[in-house]
Image 1: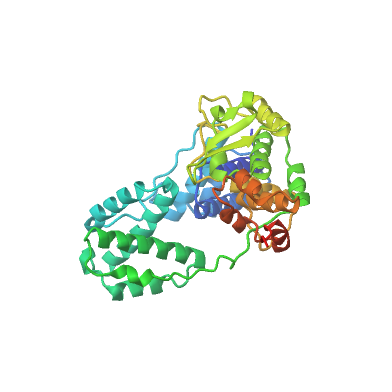
Image 2: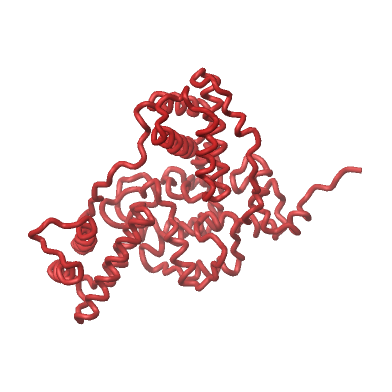
Length: 400
């Protein structure tokens, strides 16, 4: 029989694996924490569905013979999730209302704009981001009684821009660049006779506003030392961390890594990067090779799924698109007692750290760019703002 504490721990991992939103995860964990406290007060440590129902009736005052509030229904679901996991059954996602939808009056325009974007070299992720930003704007127009794009004038744009004032600078800049692209598209295709793109002639942003997060080699080794490689989850987590720390792979590329991407005979990993769509070859070192074999033989559940990393609970399959293994690195940062104040805690921070640590080892900038999969060194410079002194040393001499 599973203990309540172990079930809650496994259920929390399940939420991460399935890509649940932060808000939903917080709601589940709040219910489970109340359940755990209730169990302690009642001197009960093993889970049964009957004890779960007792908790629901006493703590949430739930009467199963009457209509439940949305709050009570979620509490019931939180216990049913624990019950499904304890029995090894699949957990079906509950129905959620559809998110933001494009107003019908703007459907064809948005469709044409998306087709226009697809003809460029933008990644699917970038196009989705632009689509969401434009949907927000179109929804704003409809809410303000504007149902024809030809009626959009300067005043409503200024009001919309003002509504973004509480956004982070980087987010606001991204939205404004998207709007500029959208209005250029409208003008070029005669959707709108007003030259509205002039609002976005100058979009000011300070890329140095926030420095990239960086972890030292000592901190990184401490993180790795806290991974329990005697468990299946530990073997998986160690391999994920090694790919991010030693190779600087993006979290999305790690999630999408397939078995046939490993070229054992060439001792290389060959992928098409999700963000840039460019090919990238990475070395398959002895340490990485061992971690990979160890996970595939002793950690990975048996599955026909072609992806290397799959969920460790049914249904066995690839991780959801939204999952970028934030919980993996965060778990070991906590265990290693690393001070993360003012630093990001995702796998991308390991990518920044790799770039800086390579620079400190006097690795030339073009080599670092190649390792990170950047097309030019200007992009890599963004990763290296954390060490200006080393960056000056890496600069090329000016010919006399």
